[in-house]
Amino acid sequence: MRVVNRHSTMCRWLPFVLGGLLVAMLSALWARYVLGPIPFDTSAGGWLWGDLAQVRIAWGQYLSDPDAHWLTTNRLSYPKPMSIALFDPMPLLLLLARPFAGWVGEGHQYFGYYFGLCLLLQGVFGYLATSRAMVLAGGGQSWASRGCAVLAGLLFASVPYTFVRFQGHTALSSQWVLVFAIWVVLSTLDWPWQKWCLANGAVLLVATGINPYFVLMILISDGVLVALLLRQRRYREVLIRLSVLVAVAAAGLMIFGFIAGSTADTGGYGVYSMNLLGPLDSNGRGGLLPLDVADATGGQTFEGFDYVGAGLLALGTVALASGLSRRRSTSRFPFLAALLISTCCAILAMSTHLTVGSYAVDIPVPRAAIFLLSRFRGSGRLFWMAGFWLLLVAVAACVTHFGSRRTVFVLAMTVLAQFVDLRPLAADVRTNIASYSTQRLSGVPDGNYSAILVFPAWQCDTVKTPGGVRNYESIGYFALGHHIPTNNFYAARTPDSQQRFHCNYDARLKQVDSRAAYLLSEELFTQYRDRFAAMQCQRLAGMDAAWSCLPEGGR
Image (cartoon, rainbow, N blue to C red; front, side, top):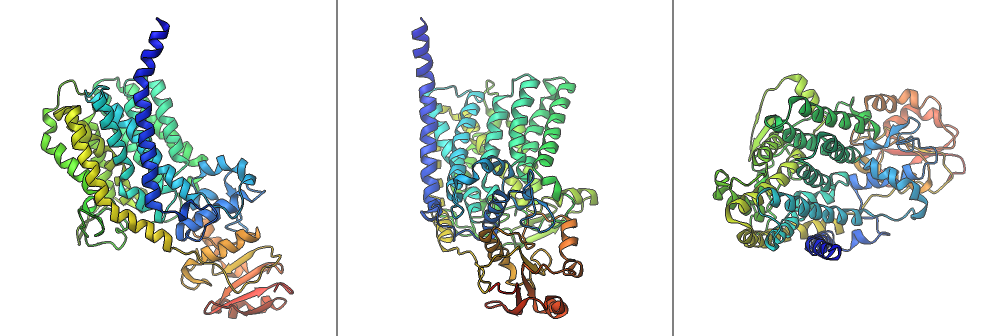
């Protein structure tokens, strides 16, 4: 009997595991197509520019700093220590990588492999979340249900607002954590509050170690689901769950250093908002839906990019036509909660600066709300959670109306349309990545410098800083290659105290370090040139209106 039971268990789990492996393999192949070969060459770092370059520099400086304390180092904000989390390097993964820093060569990068892993995990967690949704929707665990879960997993991996993000952000490409959170919260609907808090709190803690935007989206998702349980559970139990979520979020953001940037005046809520037509807008690069909506804010084509793909739009249309009101009574899928979550996320994504095509209107809200929301300047990102939930809603709606067997056919057509539509967009991302080139510093010879100091530093004046608006790349790589600190940085969030410290030029140049390399604008060199009398100063080659002052014998 025991052998029979084991055989029965294996037969039940084997199709499930094979389905997950199939999704993982196909998602990895899709990631390879999107990224192209260059990011998977660990010795090729020239394609890392902009925010990607700054994250690479932050990782390298932190991992090579023997004096780094928890997540604090002065290698990028010399001599004032600063939380490395403010450079968006995914501090949780950075801490996990620190013990192995000596095993990896300094010139190597693994961004391509991480981006590939993001799509793989997104597909697998989408497969798991859909499998759970199928059970809740009454689809059972038949071969048709497995087929639906596999196809839906591929749709999760295909969502374009994930892979388009590969061109600019590392942490924000980690959208797998959102799908992970959806799977866990669906799987724990019936759990006692203690186990529910442990499972969902753990997911939220992981999110706090990656990026604050994910924390807010998961809080909305889990919070709405818990709040709607008021009809089924005691008020006190619901309050405990919500309190645990808030406490975990606050503790995690503090532990991983994001709280350090909370006093910074980031402002601009609505600058990078989602256009109301954003989910339909492929920026003219969709194979089936080449709609290009006017960018009403100047930042929506990338920061507010929320296109979901023609396949998902078609699936949503079919689901809407099927009529959610006619779902079977056996369905336990939380349609109302999912739609409410999506609505909340979409409203926040559109921000108080509402745009529809090229038209815009400002919606007045209390100043206190703006103060809190300004921490989420790129509000268009908040739609991501809505997009994932709406995908699950569409699948569950089709299952409850058509049944699993017919839904397999619907999803197969959806996947085909999705990848046909996204192929040009993916090719565009691959071409862009292949053409990117980081900036390197020329005109400053190798030497035994104590630091490389820039006045004005990038965070003080992006126009007059020597080397211009991308000098955080060239100077950052120079500092990293020489294992020395710099005062010149570009952070996602710069605390006010850091701003005041580095931009007080008279105080910072009161005592010159004779062993450091200095780069100064024409204006500041003219003002403080007498303080560099003991150093070798000359116009910096390759940079207009900039000077270098190096130690004697430093050239």
